[in-house]
Length: 288
Ligand SMILES: C[S@@+](CC[C@H](N)C(=O)[O-])C[C@H]1O[C@@H](n2cnc3c(N)ncnc32)[C@H](O)[C@@H]1O
Image (cartoon, rainbow, N blue to C red):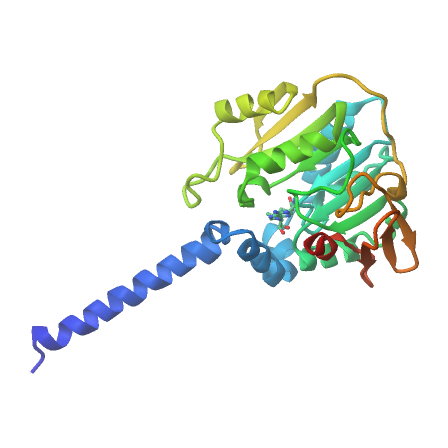
C-alpha cells in the first residue's frame, strides 16, 4: 500500500531535481554564465560558437540598414575610418561594414572566445587586407590612447564582469571627436542587475567624457547608443596594424610582425598568429 512515507521522499527528490535543473538552465543557458565569471562566459561561447550564427540568424539586409549604413552616416564624409569592434563574436559588425559598397576603412575585431574568432576568421576570408582579429579581453585593449575613429561593441557589455571598466577602456582608445556605438540590454528579466537604465547609461557616458549621446530603441532586447568623444582630432584612417598594436608587457612600445608572430620592440614578448590568422595576444598578456 502506498503511504505518505513512501511518496514523500520521491516527491522531495523530484522537486529537488527540478529545482537544480531550473537553476542550471538559468545559470548556464538563460543568463549565459554571467553570474559565474568571465571564464565561464567565454567557455560557453567557445562551446556554442558553431551554433551562434544559426541561433542569431542575422539578416544581412537589416545588418546593412541598422549597423553599417548609420555608422557611415555618422562619420560622413569619411569613408576610410579605423574601426574597433570589441567582443566581435563571429564578425557580425566587420562583415556588415566590409560589405557596404562605400566602406574603405579597416576593422579590428577583438574577442576573448578563441572559437568565436575562428568562425569570424573563416567568414572574413577575402577581406584580409581590411581586417584583423585579435584574441584579447575587452578590459585590456592593446592600443594607445586616442587611436580609433570608431569603437563599437554590440550585445556584449552585459556579459562582462565590470562593464563600466570595459566602457572606459573603449573610450580610452577612441580618438577625440570619434564615434562610440554600443548596445545596452534593456530586457533583463533573466539577467537582473546586468544592465543600465537609460538615465544611468546617459550619466555614465558623460562621466566617460562622451557628448551628444543618443539612446534609441533598437531590437526587442536592446537600445542602440551613439556618442561622440569630447574634443576634436585628425581622422586616424585605415592605418596598418604595426602602427597601432602595443605590447601588453610594456604598453609604451609597439610590436613588429615576424613570420607567424608579433614581437615586442623592447621586451621578449611575442604574440603568435594562429593558422586562421587570429593574433593570439591574450596568452602573452596572461604571462606578463
Ligand atoms: C552575444 S555575443 C555578441 C557578438 C557580436 N558582437 C554580435 O553582435 O554578434 C557576446 C560576445 O562577447 C564576448 N565576450 C564576453 N566577455 C568578453 C570579454 N570580457 N572580453 C572580450 N570579449 C568578451 C563573447 O566571447 C562573445 O563573442
